[in-house]
Length: 149
Image (tube, rainbow, N blue to C red; front, side, top):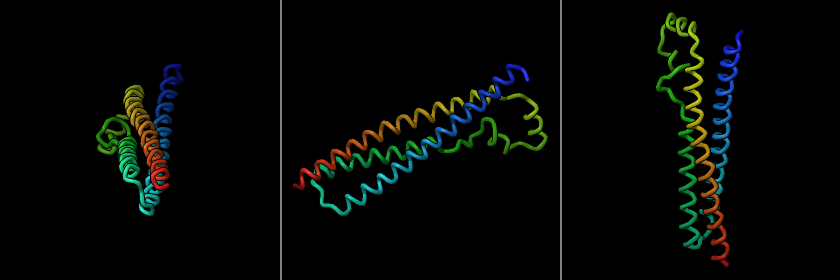
């Protein structure tokens, strides 16, 4: 195996691992956000809230719903083509043999890297919005406690 071949194999494995890590992080954040929204709904539906707490809490919930939309967009499968599985699903057995005989790892690495960067950007934005939503909900909780006292 040549040095270039080994480097291509290593880079290909690395970018695939980064995609898997990103999807795992997005899934965990999605579960956390869903649990947070369920908890907020439970507390808000069983508590008489100060109007200011209700308004700020509603904005916080809206931000968390935007986080959910962003995370779903990050983990949404791309079946529009490119290389790999989606492309192979449209090929005949002979076309698959021909495409596998060619070394398309460099192109695949470039495509997968672009996908990974887009996923990372969405995940980073989702994390930032989670902080904003959490801060708004914290302010709403403080207003509910102070306003109810």
